[in-house]
Length: 638
Image 1 (tube, one colour):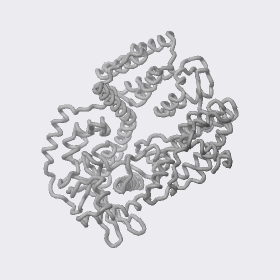
Image 2 (cartoon, rainbow, N blue to C red):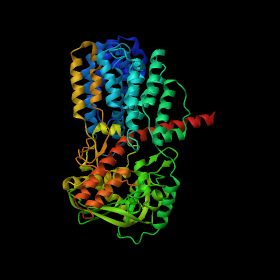
Image 3 (cartoon, rainbow, N blue to C red):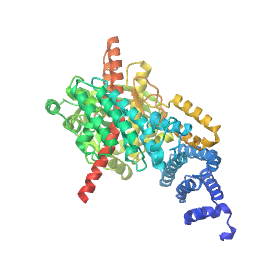
Image 4 (cartoon, one colour):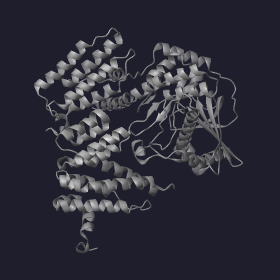
């Protein structure tokens, strides 16, 4: 088509695809409005079956940001359009066709990336340089740092607007001083318990302070710096402890934050990270000797108590094999078994190995090695579901109607299982696609793939939850195993909830109180033209997901769209699953009394709090370790 025959919208779209830099030299208001129209039209007419390249949509947000970042009126004008487009993308994500198709998957991934891009752009329109006090912006910044406590969101805000580090409140007090106060309060809470309290807040505020003081934009006068140093030293003088561990931890965190304020470079090594985050790479000699004794004691656990053929399916190189599957189809009924390694049959709750697992709470998987929750000679050998090996298991048996998907029968057994074969996801997919000489195994894979759609009916992942929890690769194998584990965890949680027995649930809830507070702030800001530029950003925050948590009180799992959920299927690498297994043995497989209920309720509350309070610090350890690893590689390369 000749350029003279193009509409203005077509011309802008063509320029966007072929020569986007030229858009900056055109009428910015008109270009911005046209880009929003193009985006809106493309999303409204989005078709999953199209193979057309839509990557130009990603550029729209970068260009729009540059064009309207200084124009509050345009930002306000486009707010409703952005809200509409955002909602339309979410609807499209929900409406993804179920058929396995490369084009559909490509377009689905494009939408996921697009909603990420859009939300980052919305965040970018928030505020420019908040050095000068603005009560609404100060309230909003405070919400991000002190209430939301998502370090990634704070990072995004800082990267877009590095002047945040110099923000002042209405009394002229620097924001950084308030963060330091929060750090010292968290340190006090950490040192207040006999066995040390929750560490997550302490680690969070430590990260925020390091971002502040490492910022090139940070401008702190000598008086403020001296004030903060004195505040830290005063805290140290006013807090004395008799316990050696408390004195050591106080000294470590005080000196660590003094180094941060003084801009003194820390020698970040593995020992530093292990001590700070309470993640120990090695087991003590007492643990090693105990694990060797258990390994010898359970070299032979006896004959298998089930004749079912049981297969494990894991990623390449997996070591802690804690779940296996068995399946037959007879007379229109799937006889489905989920067989889970049972560490409790090897390691009693009174064991020092269980004490250590309770301190670690989870296994950590690094790029180059694993820090197991249990010693590896047990987690990867004795208790692991290895080929040809008889292993203590807890088996969950489901009889499911192949036509209606109805659960006909559900049974739980303590068993000794002999594992038929350890298979990789790749082997599963290859055999399913190309066949295998083992006809019985092939039929099992076909039946399992067909059963997967039935198992998935009990849950419905929300689009944003998927965005926050992306899968590295989705295949028939990974889908089948994931569906089997979620289904099992759901049915067990449902069983305990219906019987009103003590149990540890995996809960994910939206805090309605926070949403109401944000909405009230949003409504106040709508009345003030000077602050309307952050209204849409609050809408973004209202859609953020809180962390899932463990609790004795079931509140459902919003992200999975399920009323009952738990973690039972990975006990070799998660403490919560061990607690769930204890509950099953105590209240489903054995008789119990009121004292047992009271004692288990107390234990669940204590353990759930421990796991919840350690999760963020464990995750940050993994991030810091990866940075250390990459830095060491760069030094070696030099």
